[in-house]
Image (cartoon, rainbow, N blue to C red):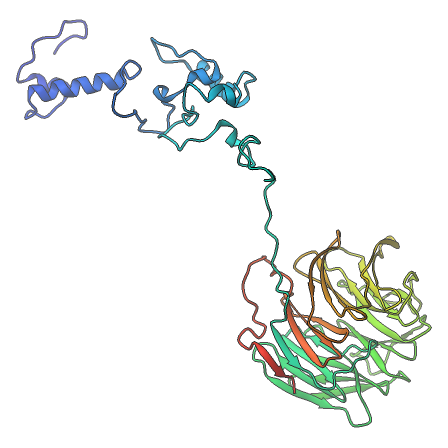
Length: 476
C-alpha cells in the first residue's frame, strides 16, 4: 500500500483496487473517472463550456454566485469561510451598498441568485417587493396594493312565491322564518307554512272570518308559532301537529308585533302596551310595559335575552330590561314611526333602528353607554332591518318611494347592493336559519327570495333553500 507522500507508480492491472473500482474496469476508464473527480473537487478552476454545474443538495454553489452584485471579491485560491458567507448573506438582505436596478442591468443576468439550486426564470431584483413588482415595471394606473375581490350579490330574486291577500299595512309583521327552515306567512285570516327544504305548503290554521292575522313569530326552537290577531288575542300553535295549544288574552286592540325570549313571549298592540307572557305560567301575562303613546309596531329581544327594544307610531324607540315596567332607555330622534329594529349579533349593545316616511333614516345606538353612534339618510321609508349573523353587514327594506332592498357594510355603511323587483313597499323581511338568504314580502302579494349574505366560512356553495325549485309558484 502506497504512502500519501510517495510519487505515483505506474498503473498496473491491480491498481484499480486503489480506487475501489471493479476489477473489470480498464485503464482508460479509470483515467477518465479520475479526471472527472478532479474537476468536481477543483470546480472553482474548471467550468464546463456546455452546461452549468448544479449542486446535488440545496447548498450555495460558488460557481453560480455573482459576487460583484454585492461588492464582494471571490477568493481565487480557497473556499470562503463561514464569516465571509454570513457577510455575503447580510449584505444581500440588508446591505446599504446593494446597487440599484440600473446598475445591475448590464454585466450579468439578475436571475442568478446567491441561493441557487438550479437556474431560475429571469426575475428583476426589485420584483421581490411584496406587491409583486417595482414602480418602474408597473403599467400606468395599476395599483401596487393587493386587490381584494368583492362578493358578487345577485341583483334579482332567485325564487318568487305568490301570496294572495298579503296585507299592505306598515304596522303588521306577517312573515317569519323558523330554525327548522319553515316559513310562516299570515294571509288574511289564515296562516300558511312553506317548508324551504321540500317546498311543501301546509295550511296551519284559519282563525275565522271575523278575525285577521296581524303578526307571526316562531319560538326559538322553531316548533311552536305565536299568532297575533286583530281582536287582541295571542295564539300558540304546535306546527308539527297543526294544533292550537293555547290562547292568551290581555290586549284590547290588534297585536301587530311579537318577540320571543326563550320561554317569554312579548306582544305589542295598538292599545300602546307591551305584555310579557311566560308560557310556563297559567296567567296570560306576567307583566305589562307602558310608555308608548301610540301603537307598538316593532319588538326585538337582544341576542343575550337581557334587553327588549320596542318601536312605536309615536316615533319613539325604547329599551327595557328583563324586570322593568318602564323603559330604561328612551331615544326620541326619529321623526316617524319606528318599526325597523335589529340588534347586532357581533357587538353587545349595538342596536339599529329605522324610521318611516317622514324620517327615512337608519340610526345606530350603543345601549351599554346610552349614546347615539351614527345616522344615515336612506331617502326612503325604512320598513325592516336585519343583521347578518355571518358577517358584519345588515340589510334594510324600504317603502315610499323606491321600494328597494339595500345590503350595507357596517360600520362604513357602504352600499354593497341595491335590489329591486317589488312594485309595492317592502313591508316584510325574514332571514333563513343559515343566515345566507332573505325573504321579502310586499303589498304586490309576492314573496321574493334573495341570496345576499355569505356562509359562515365564506364558501360559495348553494343554499339548501329551495335550490331545486326556481321560478314562480303560489304559497296557497
